[in-house]
Length: 105
Image (cartoon, rainbow, N blue to C red; front, side):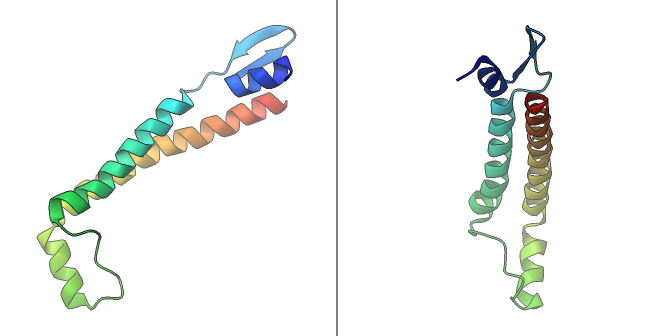
């Protein structure tokens, strides 16, 4: 493995014989935060409502509406945590693309 390839894996880029660290968040930390928030959003509905999942869209409205009326607070928590998990996921994607572009050029 060349020094340049090792630097690309490490998140550093070698230019003109100097070593530059890529200025982005730690990808491992972003991945852990995303995973925790995503699993928490799934767990909120499963654990606290007693139901394994949301109702199916193919079910009649007289089954769907009472579900969301009964578990409105838990559905909001689930949505909040899923939106929260999208932020570190987006940062992860942007940082990865930036690192790949800086290692190619």
